[in-house]
Length: 275
Image (cartoon, rainbow, N blue to C red; front, side, top):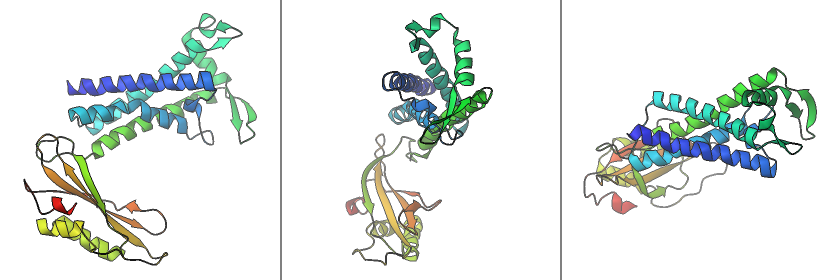
């Protein structure tokens, strides 16, 4: 039943994504689905594919559905192919040639073939015409299909990455977040290790570290600690999810395998008051 709910939600957003793309192309003259970089990077397909599968996130949270990796791959492939076909079908039904609907002139599969092989490739800001795509159009279509699938699979990867309650399996909700000031990397790593392996008071100490902000040199590599107080909406279990991020320049990036969940005792007043 839950799997059906997940698929139903994706069907709704799949239709919405295809209809939105068709409307954008028809009324604004911008086909997001067709947006590519250097002919081979299907940026538009990635975006539309992610939008098409976005209903899975809502359904997963509402009904605590946790799809397997295999379900994610299969569903992403189905969503990608269905969205791509639906976009072509909507274009087929909306497109007119000199006031005549294209659907009255050719069948759907002939239209798809013409769209792929007779479309012109353009390059650069000047949109220089490189001629018809020909048989290369089918290869470009496969690349776009791959973009749809990757975009949809990204959504499933997000779902699988969402924190779930270790006691009942429901998805946790973030209540509050604390971020440390910039810290030397060695110091931040030591504090985070204390959070991972220490007792409840040690978790509180890590969450509240450091007592006072400090200034580091601009070029000095730095780190910061991010701790989120989460609560299970079903069984009311509280937990803290901690992450270590480092930066050698401007952007902070999460350290691989640093994200750790520490469940708290029921009715905890030691750690929760630190937030």
